[in-house]
Image 1: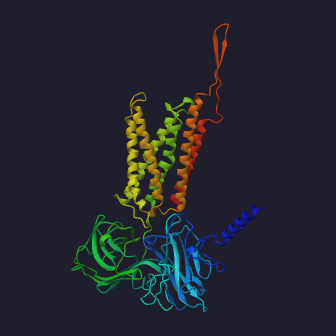
Image 2: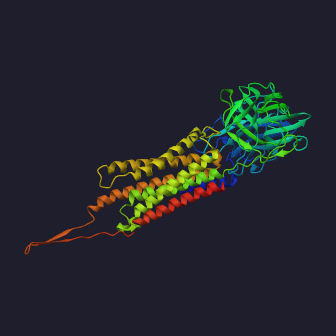
Image 3: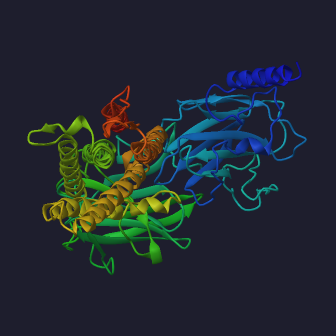
Length: 595
């Protein structure tokens, strides 16, 4: 009886919690429940609060309405918890969310969260209206989560103008008084499409970046704005196609607290800046940074005498790039997009960016999964544990196990080399993976991929020059063949797992879970077959019972042997292993293709 009561209590509490939080952050509390600082800590295992993540919160008020913008710089987030908090704990927060983005919900007067953990958000805007009974100052605090398996950031609304802020006890909290109205993100330009041409990324009334151009007599005024932290740049390029190379470039840089503008050009994938704006027909009107908004405003002549500043009398593809500024110098971009068509910069048109083409990435990933999750897993297990299978039968003049092994490993070679060629054609050169958070280990994905491909090519070449089975040096080949093959398989599994977590793959966290499950199952299968082989060797010396019957009269001997036949043939377990590996492979490929 004493055991049943606690179990019943646990069951009822667990069921109540499931009803209270069907989706979103568990810390999103209804009005009837007390709130706590612990509500902001996700229950995601070993993840921690990482203040270096590029996630930000801005809040402004107009009368009784507060506009709150949450955004990510060159990244995205899947989950969040947003809360309105009184600066004075004796005050009561009362109000309601009057505007909420899709895939979000409010849990109470003060709390809001996501409803779909599969959606990638770059920016979200909430409008919260305070009640007439509310008094005192507030600030907006949020937990922003990249993915469930990665770190999160707890942050609060940004600091308004000096003299109007009060800092709470937690270093990440910033209070904003009711009377202040600082800039909140980037507001959409109402002149876009009428007097100005525009390229932007806006959601819920807030933009993460905005680029405009407007013809003014013999000049064109450009405005480049982006929500960004320091030591980053936003650049636009004028290109005859939608690819980098031979382009005229304008760059707005924020480094060390100072915003500057520069011109440059590209040769292939190499960028070079112009030493001066003299003689280019370009004048800088403004370069500033306010509340995380970096802004450059310039005017340039329609026709420049400088060959690196292209004429605007013709249309160009508009390239946009964002990247870091180590030492203040423009380096390879972390994000690059292109306009969906050529742009007439003398007209007021609304431009959209091409959707990222991930076809080659999907083919690359699918080929690698087919090669290593399916074919390699089958080929390795067959060669290691089933050489004595099929009772010595042959297939096309060779033992069955050898035909399965050879077919599998040839398939590994073909799919791996094809995957390597596909991704190299896509990126055009060796390129480091740009990581938006602190998962620096993902940068080793290209290097590991090259190593795996090299081992994949080396192993069959070794096989072509193997010595005869009876040669005294054959054991050396066997060891080398085993080490290269097994090493390639282990590195390939790690490389595939890293690839699943790269932002460009855009895979949900469930894909990694499937990969973890595959790795665990494969290890269990290897251990099981190895234990079976060891036990079988021990039984082979005892599975024949010999009874010697000696006839003292005629000195004759008879031996009687009893053999145990297994109920299930050994090969059945290999077929089951094959089905498991195919199932894992198909699951991963389907997730990749449909993501």
